[in-house]
Image (cartoon, rainbow, N blue to C red; front, side, top):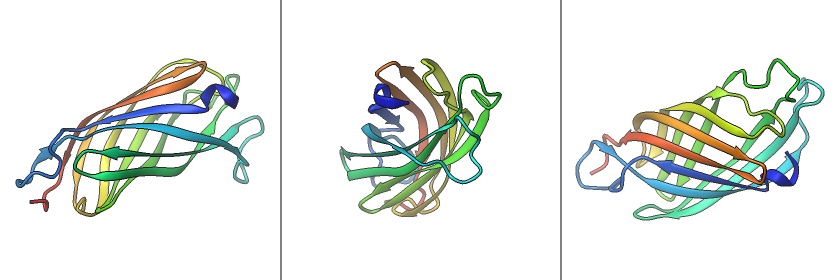
Length: 162
């Protein structure tokens, strides 16, 4: 991964009025610049894999501070059969008034490989204002030699918000 992924731009797109007075599908647009730090891989990780901790924060209209991470990113060498193989992990978005958890599924990132990776997400939980939230969508990650851009497009329903 090295310096080429020192900044990772993440864009989540759901809808603009996430805290309106009526429940239902809402959208939210967040842009994150991830801080990436190389870290030791967990016991049992195959030799040659690279491990990185991702953290980010931003301001979101109507929500205030939004944070993610630390998220462990385990990348496979390009020569490994695990490179590009489907993985599933949880991504948590923390807001001042609660948190949203999404299950993300799609190809594993490969060390030093550039290109487009398409994944999907499904909201699997929430706390506070996001309790019982549901939703789903697609994630497109454009990995470049100097970073990456992630675009999340989908919807989130906040049934208890109002």
